[in-house]
Length: 210
Image 1 (cartoon, rainbow, N blue to C red):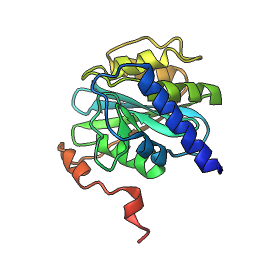
Image 2 (cartoon, one colour):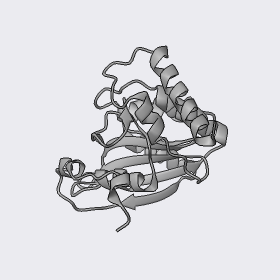
Image 3 (tube, rainbow, N blue to C red):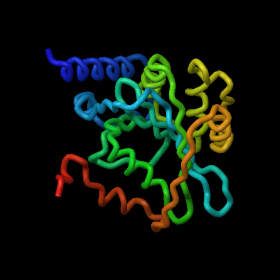
Image 4 (spheres, one colour):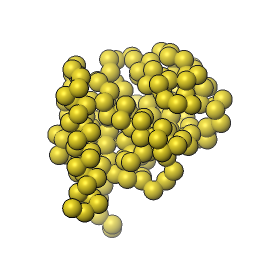
């Protein structure tokens, strides 16, 4: 059995275990085989990236999500709307976060009325893997609980015990800043109707090189 087959088997086993270990409300999405095929290993350091979507008008927080780079790279997009038939997701976990998908994900959330703050913290491989398993195991999140579910998840990780569960995205953003996270902002001024972005979404494997 090759390295890819072993990795795929591990992914299937991890996701299958998560689905049998808990009762997930509003669960669904990609099949286990689709999840395994989409698994993407990024060669960057183990890390957790926090995305905070802020209003351009008031500066208030509108959405929170994280990108976890462990044995595979996934996004935890709680109660998020980055969903499409060609995006492999299960519950609130988006798999196959290649550089192209990360770019699409980030740009999807930047628009005329909101911008995105991107903060990354490098972590140990053990912490990254723990975060990855917690994300994969997490049940679907209710609307308006994005920051609360993310902060509760992070608070269980070694080195993040000081994270206070909160409904407010900016509080979590400030916590990451205090930890010395890298910092970047993305502004774009597209129309607010981002559903058109998803309708026009072309999977990476269909884009070709031309």
